[in-house]
Image 1: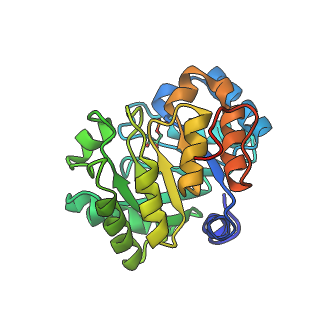
Image 2: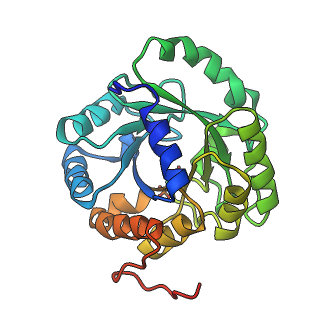
Image 3: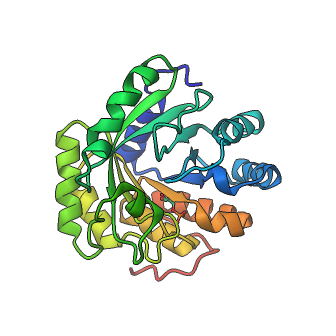
Amino acid sequence: MSSNLQMIQALLNKARKTGEKKFAVLIDPDRVTRPHMERLISLAENAGVDFFLVGGSLVIDDRLDFCVQTIKQHSSIPVILFPGSTFQISFHADALLFLSLISGRNPELLIGKHVIAAPYLRKSQLEVLSTGYMLVDGGRPTTVSYISGTNPIPADKPEIAMSTALAGEMLGMRLLYLDAGSGAQHPISDEMIQAVCSQTNAPLIVGGGIRTPELAFAKAKAGADVTVVGNILEKDPALIKDLAQAIHAAGKHQIPSSIDIDPKK
Ligand code: 1GP
């Protein structure tokens, strides 16, 4: 559990200022077995992964605590909860993304669930990270768009994402998350990331449909302070190393030899 108050927020604020890029691996508790998790954790430790995000839009099995505790037993990488509902709180984690779905107009996900969770969180040691969460059309309906009953921001409207992010920041949200949804066909465009990043100061998390080191590099370079990858690692955990290298290199303005990118872009 986090001993230092607001430790992760401070780390992300610093990354935002210095241009250092962070890599978060998303684990959906419903979709991992113990052997798979242990392999992923060991690969993540070796690759220098910065955070684990744990959660899902619809977690059916009661495996959240098991998942968080397994990571804690085997690794010192901070664990941040990415809850799809008020059921997804584990006191064994370090922090929790306190997500307000600001791209949607569902009052329950803007403030309702938060009222229920707040007193419970107050009693925990979890670092609560106030996050303006924006769902963006990733080319096909995702679990999160269905479950939340909200329309995602159109993928080709960076100005809507920018205005939404700005409003979230003005309301006091200290992190912003642009998500195309897990398994999205198309990740968030570089243009949209740039638009949000150029007008806001809060650290920006970007995820959904990022499947290659090239894409991860491009998203980090466009302005993602934290790049999140989940789905593809369920099929190909060994990709962690190249993803970590690509994301971290974007912060150092280097192009890693393992990826094929036009340096003029
Ligand atoms: C989804 O941003 C995350 O909420 C990660 O998406 O599983 O498609 O990598 P993927």
